[in-house]
Image (cartoon, rainbow, N blue to C red; front, side, top):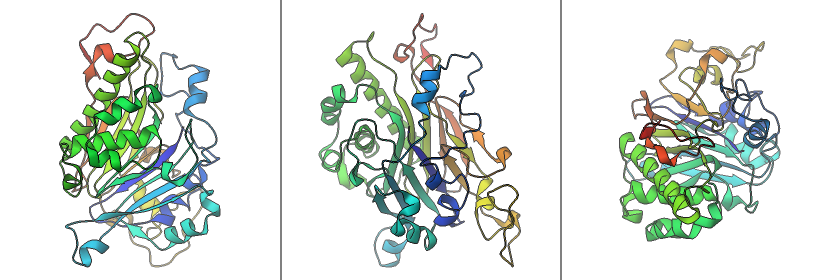
Length: 353
């Protein structure tokens, strides 16, 4: 599977180099190295996660491309929009050997970013297939897969508005998911709705409707008994708000890992005393006290600092919502029980989380 990292804060910039390159367990190094605390067994007390599932969720190489969206106020300062807009960089080069990526990270600070390294499943290795995918002020990235995507791909496109469909440049299931999400988010209004901001409740509902559409298409196209579960670890942001999903519609199997932190930003930020790697000191002078670090939320496939206590594993089928003021809320993802793939008897309840 892929790996991704998201940062959002109402007032504290992060230097991209600090969060994506410097740590021993940074996203740029997760191309071929993994930290994986609590990940291999997926917190599955019942022991239902098989060795095959572990192998599928945690492939050791994510070498098929990198994408980065960071939000800037350049458009606003030059008389444009009413808030931050995403700049985008994508490459198929190994990130630590990509001089453009290294230069961008060393010289760019932002209050919101999405970064993603890709492990391709069945689509071309080309920059347009790299996440995140941008629609106006909105950006989305995904780790996981949509089961039987090729079987439902055409039917998915029929549910999209014209602008969302036309914005698809690549061939991945993730970009089609993003286009369908934007159709729901903007109410089918296309580009006219891409520069608007929406509440996290509205963003959550748009994600939920997109997931519902996928499962219904799979059940209709393949039949309820043949439809397979999908893994959907998704992050979507407008540069000020963020929603993240950790979802898999299987009775016992877990989605890929996803962690969040409200404290790790100070450890990652070179302006503060700590260092993301255990046993290393920050050599810089005139450092700020860590309690001055601003409110922030980080969501990531893997922790990237040594302080494990700063990270919490997001539960299965949970939506994490970050408001514009930096406050965080966890919400259950509800869906009909008959959408659950279960090798045994189905669950008794009509709805599950």
